[in-house]
Structure formats: structure tokens, C-alpha cells
Length: 359
Image (cartoon, rainbow, N blue to C red):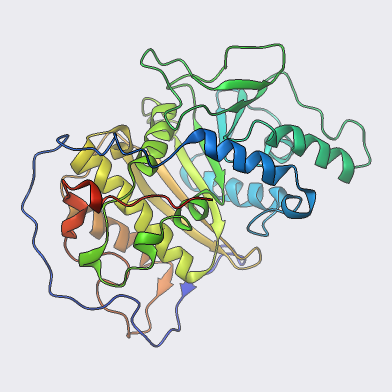
């Protein structure tokens, strides 16, 4: 472990999850109720809100988490090194960055890796990349600082599901301005990168993060699972020689860490045991915290094997995270994840689905 990477240590002297008698949930038939008809997420509303936010320099010139693009790419470099042998990134790689806002990683990725096949940035806000270029021009002396190579495109997402049934991308091309068909297609991506995206999600999952009793924890919003389904679909088939992965750079706050882990687990559970959707092929394989940058990084690899039970998934995640955080002894066994499946995770009732709160 690098000097800058340290275990996430909790010194809290209280339990953040109330101890409850485990509730055993019998296996259920899947695909019976995926909640897809819940109108809980409107891309048009997201685009309008973020366009307004990114046009306000006072609010959006600084990155959300305090981690700048250079620092994020440094952490991403370290994460890729844990799953791949050199060359870490080369001309075979198609990088997709989601939720880049006014601080896309593209320029620092070009500096760090120099040679990769393609880059696509995907945002709900069509104005974000234009504002990002303006910001870079204002903050860098060189006129070429904001230049973009020919292998770079930026898209405005028109749906949470990025891909049509034929594998083509349904997003709108913003850059380059003279192209109308996205280069991005289902299965074309090798690395999905995101900064503060888990935080963006969990901050809006108010129904779960405020719940101390796992028995009351709602079924995760279908919109969140569909986001991860799009990421998994973008990655396509597994490559044994060249692992494909989603890498999240997030704030390193300990409580946020718990919420991020729970969100990942809930997504994979729902995709695997309820929806039978593409996100079931994702597995959390690495988690690290960087003390210097006050950030955490989560790596989810694309695999060929789905979990066979909730207990298998829970044990896998607990074993992984046991290496990077210490419990003070005051936490219950279900502090990070419930010991058994919460009943509402298997709900048929639309009222038990969690909704993403409005921006």
C-alpha cells in the first residue's frame, strides 16, 4: 500500500445501524416486477438543472469533492495498476467518463497515458463540456490547453439507458459539432471512469441513507440500477487478458464510504436477484482511500460470474473491505451490510421503491 493510501478507520463510539433480529426472506421468482414504470427520474429535468448550475461560475468552477482532475487521474492510474499489467492503457482502450461536469479528466488522461484509442464523455448537461472548455481557457495560459484530439467526443445523455436494442448509442453528440452519430456503442468501452458519481447518487437516496433499521431499508431506485446497467453494457464482453472495469473516485468521508458500499451492494443485488440485468456481472474488487487527497476509489470489474446468493455477495464485500477499515468494536455485525436480505429489497409494492430526490 502506498504512503498516501491508508485504511479507513472508524473511531465512532456508537452503532450506526440498530441491531435487529435477522429476517429470513425466501427465494423469489425474478423479473416479475422491476419497477421500470416508475417515473422517478426525468433526464430533461436533470439536464435543465445542471445546465443552469454549470453556467454559474461561482458555483461550478470548483470540483464537487475538492479532488481535482490531476489528483483523480493519479488515483485512477494506481487503481488500473492493481488490475492490469503494463501497458496499463494503450491504443486498445476506449475510455468512457460519466458525469464529468466542468472538470472532465480528458486533458489529464492524455498527459498520464498519452496513448489510448478513444475517449467519450457522457453528461446530462449538454452545456457542461462547453463550459469546461471555457473554464480551462480562463485558467491556462496556453491557447492549446483546451484543445481536444480527434479521438475525443462528448455526448449529452438523452436516457439513463445509453444504448438502443441494436447496440447503438442514443445520446446526442455535442463535440465534435460536425458529427451526429456517437462513436460510443454497446461493448466498445474498456474503462468507465467517474468522479463523485456515487456521491451524486447516494446524496439523493434519502430514503435509505437516513434509515437506521435495515428492515425499513427500501428497494433501490430502478433508475440507479439502470445507470449501472448502462455502464456494464458499455463494457461488453469480459477480456481475460485485459480486465474491464468501472472506477469511481469519491470523497473519502467514512460515513459516505458506508453509503457508497451499501449502494453498490444494493445495485448488484437488485440486478442479480430481481431484474436479471447487466449490472449483475459487476464485482467490487478493490477499494482504497487516499489520505492526501481525502478521497476513496472503488473498482468494479466486469466478470463472467454472477453471485449465487446474497450471503456470497455480502461475504465477498466484507472480506474485501476488512482490509481497509477497522471497526472500533462498537458496531453491530450489520453495520456495513445487513446480515440477511431486508424484506423491502424483494418488494412487489411500488411504494417500497426508493426514489431519487430532486436536485
